[in-house]
Image 1: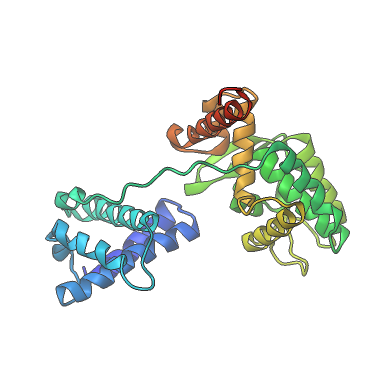
Image 2: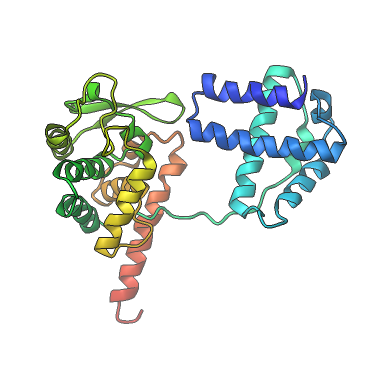
Amino acid sequence: MNAAGLLTEWIAHLRDERRFAAHSVEAYGRDVGAFLGFLQSHLGGEATLSDLGALEPRDLRAYLAHRRQGEQALSDRSISRALAAIRGFFRYLERRHGLTNARLSLVRGPRLKRSLPRPVSESAARSLIQEAEADAPQEWTGARDAALVTLLYAAGLRISEALALTGADRPLPEALRVHGKGGKERLVPMLPAARDAVERYAALCPYALTGDAPLFRAARGGPFSARMAQAVLADLRGRLGLPSSATPHALRHAFATHLLAHGADLRAIQELLGHESLSTTQGYTSVEAQKILQAHRRAHPRA
């Protein structure tokens, strides 16, 4: 089988069997597709399964060096992501087609500085919710924006998870079953404030929020998209003078960070967020430690 067929097969595996999110499938396909395109010119023809098995570390390093050049040069983080995608592709080839190429594991990606989550503060989260309704063009869109912001902060949902809710999900139960990354399910408690905010929006919304129809609607009745939600947060943070880091995902970070600050167990937060690895959740402990150090430096007379 040639490289193009193998790539198509792997993408179908990620989409249909691993249940990866659509944007993740697209990103993985783009990264590995670019690698296979490079190999076509590097090897003088389209790569086959045996060609992939015969690749040397220098071939992979040549590709990574190629991606660092030109006007569209990739950052260290993008290089690391591309390398992870290529490794995932080769693991699939090993399982499904018996291809073994342990030599490629010798290639190391750039060492990345781990970035800390950037949550909004408790007061900023409250202000975002209040501001959402303060100056909306229509009452129902203001209620929609407030309901969405409340849901992201009160339940720690990803924006894709919140926008995937349908009319059948309301009224929201005390524990909502959420379908996260990879199709994994988790139960997330719903605070009365979030449930009430959604019901207030539903009562004002001029469109029927029933059945499989999207719960959150755009002004003309279509699905409310992640790009629209990002635009709403950009407008709100501009009005409140908040930094550019105040995004929909920052509300999810705030959910976890504020729970941790008020004594929640790290393992419980992992379950609430749907993190596969506890090490991912442990990043929030660094945020809290950083706040303590900053407070000490500001307040200690010998700092």
